[in-house]
Image (tube, rainbow, N blue to C red; front, side, top):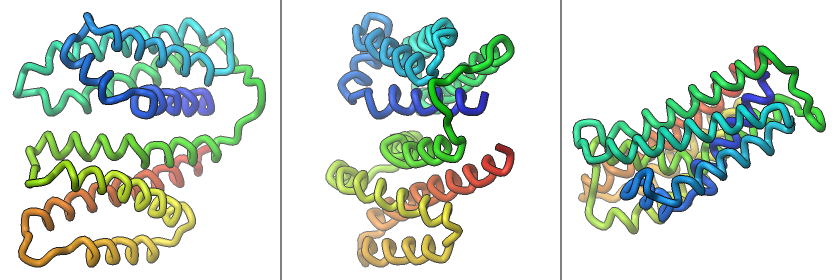
Length: 234
């Protein structure tokens, strides 16, 4: 069950973050159930879940994951006009997706024994999912947190464009150091970035960068600790 669950989490990361453009997200948000991109996205979710399950018996469950995904994304667009909950919709949406995957994989495991085409090592899947999470998904998570707390500065777009690439590299390095048990290297990396990005007299920009840095490193460190903790029970 663990391998199947990890593979479907990887499928979710691929479908919801790597294989979904900003154009698709905007179309779904504006048009909801009338958006063709919503149904294309659900098709991608189904395809990736079905392919990465490596089991024909999982096809109905992959369809269920895609159907719930479509329904959740469609309802999210309907609720996006409500300002009191708009900032939380992304996190609620992701939580529902994860719970649905957990539930359907568990139901499948009660009735079937996953018959993979080849054997996976849980370590490999944990590492793959962790590094994927620390790439584009975390960029989006940090942006959504900034939007939730209305954290903005002038020339934010240019800063974010540069920060995305910097953030991915620093999280990959941080996750690698944590998995290797070299926490002192993480501290050195944080200190080095703080010195390079600090600009005296520009308090707002400094605070903005500091918040982003803490979130970025925090997610990477927690991901690494989570992987190490999970591997103790494999």
